[in-house]
Amino acid sequence: MTGKDIVMFSLQSWDMDIGGNFKDIAKVIALKNRVIYVNRPLDVITRIQDRKSVQTQARLRSIRGVENSVTEVEKNLWVLNIPELLYSINFLPKGFFYTWLNKKNNRMVAKGIRDAMKKLEFKNEVLLIDNDFFNGRYLKEYLNPEVFIYYLRDYLRFHKYFQKHGSRAEPEIISKADAVITDSVYLDNYARQYNRRCFYIPKGCSDEFRKLDHSEPDDLKEIPHPRVGYLGALTSKRIDVDLLEKIAKALPEYNFVFIGPEDEVFKKSVLHQMSNVFFPGFKEQSLAPAYIQHFDVCTNIQVINETTIGNHPRKILEYLSAGKPVVATKTDAMMEYENLVFLCDTESGYIDGIKCAVAESGDERKREARILRGNEYTWEATTEKFYKVIEGVYENKKS
Image 1 (cartoon, one colour):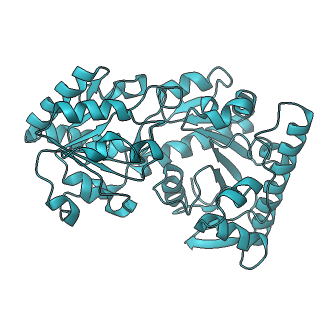
Image 2 (cartoon, rainbow, N blue to C red; image 1 turned 45 degrees about the vertical axis):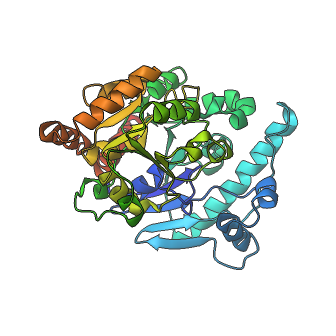
Image 3 (cartoon, rainbow, N blue to C red; image 1 turned 45 degrees about the horizontal axis):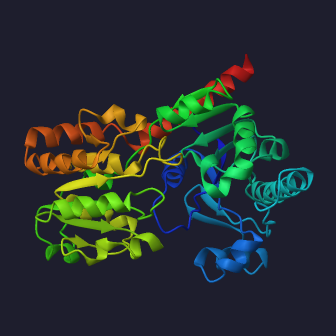
């Protein structure tokens, strides 16, 4: 697919601190098409509670007209800050007033997008909305794109923040999409309740994780092997802190390394008092491949809840691409890797899995099998599948 004008709207802002799937897809799409990537708009409560953040200050500069709301960040790829302050409405009860303000928010977002499209002379656009079923709920009506694709990567409607209004908003936006793309079998089955035009497309992985010549980071050099590592957001909503404490206590001869920003539960956990547990802190995404390369085993030990049960973790592909043995929580979404990953659902299972993973960390044949599987998941391959879905919508509309 070439020469198309694409508008991409996501809960993942371009200027967020960690890597993002939708951002990686946007970069590949922009190689052959023009892309406007819409940052998550600023709302009243975020402006007050998060007023000092880089993201909030950038949105405010656009709202005040201090700087352009549209910025070219790469060739054919522009990032848009909506120059409007949205109403914070999630606390409102269901009903007329909530719906009226929700539509008003959507109209402000649509106006910002239309102004950017007019400035850049975008025409006959394709609209891709990534998981934002609140601020994107009525964009199909207000923008009237040629093609509207809803991208479903997380099961958000049961998350505390999204629960009240998400139970109506997400099924509605799914049902009116021309097609729905999901990144796990679980989410695909869920979306098919509301739209039969669903397509499961696994996410990709950066080529940097396939390079095996990264220098060992200085803050890992003092940590003895075997190293059992995790790299990503350390949030108790997704990662099982209590289970990690038990595992680290049961395996004192192994050193556990947790890299990423911590929530308050992690900061206050017993893990920080254990001699075989290390927290090097948050690292830029560009440094992630080097840390993973110098782990002996990689983990993703999750809490099973409505948010994680359908999740297809990006980090699993990163671990496999680097050839690392992986120990992870057993879910439906993870079953496609059961021949390559130690999938566990009990405390003893994780402990035994880590022991077995460390034992096979030097097995070259298994390492090559993991790399071979990881090499199947590139952002170029993912994006080509997106193109086929979009082109299929065009064909259906013609016929």
